[in-house]
Length: 77
Image 1 (cartoon, rainbow, N blue to C red):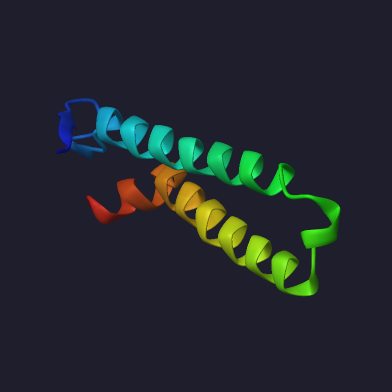
Image 2: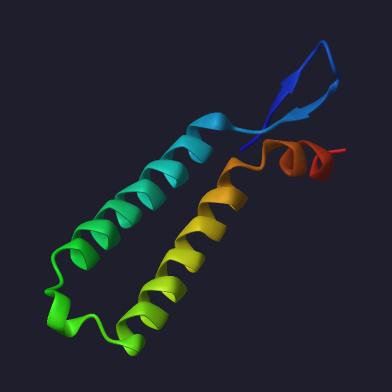
């Protein structure tokens, strides 16, 4: 939920919700990093690297979206 900042007379993003989203995404990234780091070298095939890239790509895009406060403010206009 957004709150209204009287200085700007428009809704501001609810940073508590955003913080929860970021925390969840960061936890997902930690799990990915540990999972991939624990993979033995003999299992690091081209398929492994393609899968790892896709998983990281999804998580990083989610993190960037969650941190994009500028876009959230523009949406409230």
